[in-house]
Image (tube, rainbow, N blue to C red; front, side, top):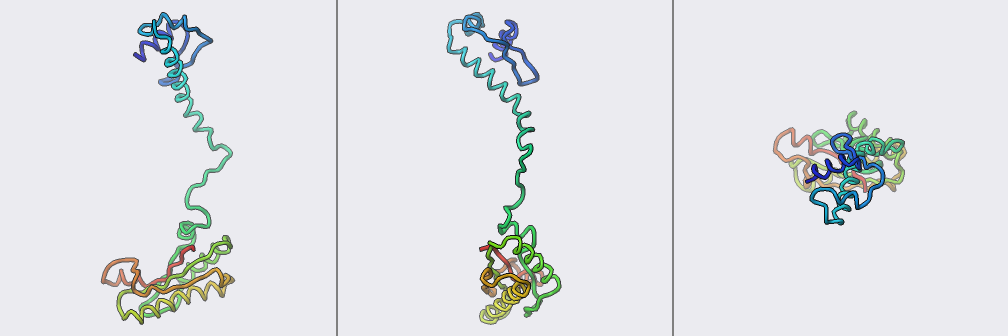
Length: 199
């Protein structure tokens, strides 16, 4: 039916097809000119449907042009929201790792903390929590104390490099919140960490 109506509009010189989906309505037309269309003859209300369909198709046909111009001169943000936890993870990294039964910062840990310092200086309104974690070997008491020493080591490094103490909180989860499940050296190495999160 659509093709019949479109052909009739084209034959009468009321519309022309441009491309696969764009119809150009030519000039003004009256209901009388639509009276002679097949299957529409005695139903004037269908004229509004034809006109609406024509306008909708015309709008759809030009939407690709509009999509190309939308955003010109306006930058659309992609990636994490600046100052968010996702931004911290993407920009600086959110965790540092420790050797077995140690809370000494490695050179890799200091490099990550240096990136966190730069990130925290860029977002002075952001407060953080540093959570110390351990692998599942050792007693609960030992791992809670070791996790606290690990989070304190990261905090102390940030403090020594100018980050305000009132922006940093620490906690130890000991062995209660493993990052990776498993009873092997790879899993244990991933679980010996201090993780920084945005509060």
